[in-house]
View 1 (cartoon, rainbow, N blue to C red):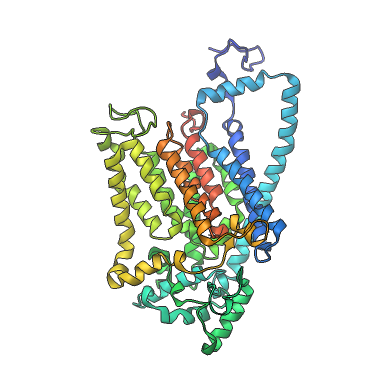
View 2: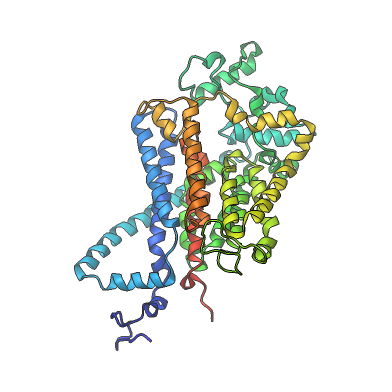
Length: 522
């Protein structure tokens, strides 16, 4: 037992065991080394998004470099927070080590911390207030208006839900394209490097697209190949079926559905975290301004990530290597996983539900498809190849469930829609590497070069999870699986805006493995 001084303060002498000090250290104090990077990464992500939104159409070299550097710094901080959490003993040892440092070093560290922490806290609170203000503005000014949507994809999902309600197959409704454009005048359409834009290198601005689309809407003789009617349907069926209940209920827009899904997504992230840390993490989540604003205005990344998050929560409950029987061959070692009784344990019984969530995520949007191999590898390394194949089969069934009626009705049209984002000659766009090419900071490479870089990055992440001696944190795969999109020809900020929330989830899963963060037992 640790010796205590007469004042009642713990003894931090070398003779005192490390675990003796830990119970008297507040959980929030031990969480600070992860909380501050989470907060800093979220702030940098929001700052990059603000600059991107304000200057995204101007191809400003300085802005492009700033956005990419701020985003890279944000990702570095988020990954630092979400990496493997030290053990309980290590936390106690580190706490004692800090206490034994020379007074001058401790004074300098405290001075820096007292400057940095208040600044980060103030900025987080201001960003959270900005989020509430912007969300309120969207709710009051556009929640019931077709002008809510700031992208054609968001507007067309609403339109396709309306088609289904009226018994029309969206995948065979190209003739409805111009009616959809007329219904959502501010959403515009996806411009292609054809027709009136064939000679352009970087493509028209959104204002130009809206103006030209209105002109072609008013005068059909002006219509050319620069707007393809097939872009009305370029996602799996759940992208628009999720809005069908609201459409049946007579909701004028997708705002309330998006709000409900967003709140559910954030609630699950918070529910994963230890109860003692949820208030602080709620403020961090709220500070991600554009996650909220994009989602409320029709972006459906969160709708795809919500079931993916549920699938990953199921992964955390799978049997871990080395916990049951002889089927596990070491902690996370390649090829490990329970065979025999281990593969039929409690984790295997949970496979249908969690794998089904993954399939439903893939039935919303193609941007979550890269998570599938990472999920399969994690299951393989924990439970073996047979379990991984079972999970993939269940995920495939869940993916087909909402899509099957449309596949049966129009297999060719449905299949063509799934690959449409890859086959259309779209212009380079986004905040990633391609932004430097658009701004002239780097040469603008052919689309195939960006596709190759994206695939190489995804392959590197997949290979790491498959071959690392110790299995990397499964929750971290949610972040790493989305990062390759920053190398794509079309790298919208919406694709990666949820990274701070996913980093909170990844960090929370590690906190839960340390008893000091668990609720106190009376």
